[in-house]
Image 1 (cartoon, rainbow, N blue to C red):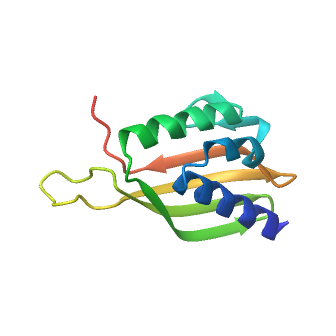
Image 2 (image 1 turned 135 degrees about the horizontal axis):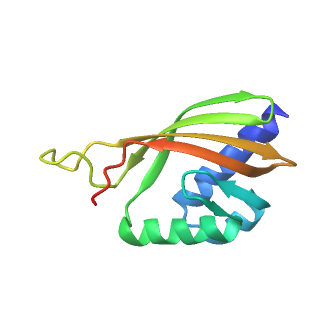
Length: 120
């Protein structure tokens, strides 16, 4: 089970970084739920990724830590290529923490926190 959960995390971040939006259909379960976005289904992930990649074409997510317990993973990442701290050349990478649950090799539920700056 632990390796299935770890593999799901690796597939998700690899697909995001390579802009493989179609891979969301294989990575996320049909009944997937994103708690931060309030959305469901793999297509909602694909759409969110597309918008993010359009807004920040240089974005890359680097996995820093992965902790797996049963069917759940907690992943700390750094997000590069997104404007961060004002006045810092190139900005500093933002930090993201995502916790997700895996069933049958696919991500079914996700929670997340991020230090990405959001303008109102």
